[in-house]
Image 1 (cartoon, rainbow, N blue to C red):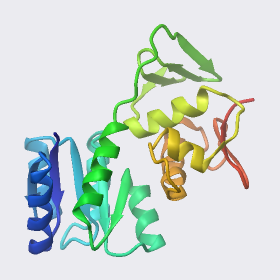
Image 2: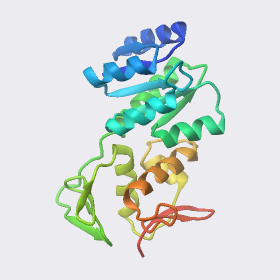
Image 3: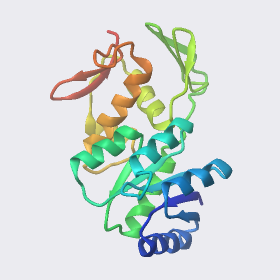
Length: 227
């Protein structure tokens, strides 16, 4: 299945999740600190990281930021409570999804599979580059350039941009984006969408607080411009 890096400081929780994920066929490397997790990731990259936020020493938020700075490895964070501040901060740090403790192993495994499914955007065969202002999107090559300079986007942000730009001017609700980009066909958490939009804006907008491309339509959702 997948190579999973599990970073969890509670020994009993760590061992329980390691055993459960292993039974589902995953290869699990389980560690108790963020420092050790980062060290092992540098030596043996994982397909996905399951990361507890409340870690001793280097906390999960900083670990998440460092993993995301190194590349697009998907991250599912574990939070002790569904606290808005914890969840939003974790998503803004670069996490792709979250699960609230106490963790049900079946739920975690399902979220891992969902994140991995959406981790590789599909190329559109025969599609040529599209120019939107100073942004060029090549769906066939799965590349994005701004003012002629290629931008590296993690898979989830790329999927979001591809979805929005495929119908420029159309307004997408957060629930529509959860279904099409996140593969969540139930009432999902709109904070996943909002955090991903914010991260995407920092990379493609000249002024993220005044977006030209990923525009907010208050009370409805988002649309792609410029119109």
